[in-house]
Image (cartoon, rainbow, N blue to C red; front, side, top):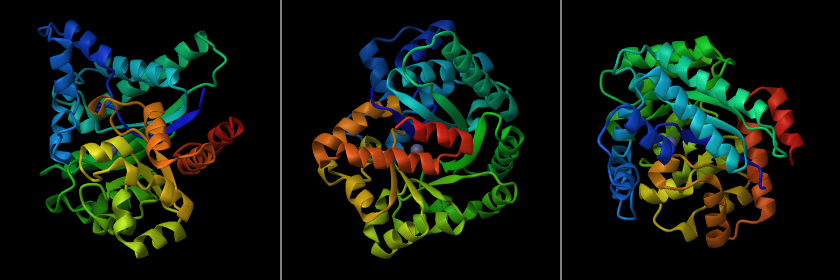
Length: 333
Ligand SMILES: [Zn+2]
């Protein structure tokens, strides 16, 4: 089985379908026909843009408000990822979106870490020939109105759990001029002072200017960043500064950041020397998994096994994990 790494995977967009059904049952919600439930959770080919894509998060987030539910979701997601051949994953989510029923951000993160630990124990008790799957959490700050305090608390929570299940930060949410990346400068400079690694969503709904802003804040990884191809100088800067792009092919088609998969530029950027990686973003919203994304780019853009090896090496280099974990990942190929 192919060994895979996913550095860009949202927990709320990737809750396994069967886990959603289980949680609906636990909470006594009325059963919904599978097909209708899938429409509630996943976008179709007629998805208009990032905003319509983000609407698909409302229902799962509603089911992610207790410690037990969060733990169950992380545990079942990791079991799924192991089946797909993943050997390392960074799972991201915004703790501030899971406090509706009174959990604090710290309790939210503690519950997700309990899910990680439950999986690691399960993995130990159920050994296979496959390499182990290791995982870290990234905490997302959100582009929302009037949530400076909540974002600050997320940075502090990441610091509290750093290297104990959490390995970095992100900035997520609707990419619009109203929520310019520069508005979050003080939070990311605090993260830098506290030595918390971070990535920033940019260059997806908005163009190259958003990537320049993320780089100005010191991001070494860009969530998506695919629209850098619109600016040659930016691509040159990205190569020179060894910035990693976390590309997500189907997600970018869903949100119309790209119109045609045949022109999806992962292979081109890779051959230009950009540190590109291939990831899923939101498995349930896009109705995909990582093996599907590799197959898609093989079929539509001629991605080769040597390209795939380079994508793996890029992911190891960029991962927010220990040197010991990087050595393990390198020893697997
Ligand atoms: Zn994302």
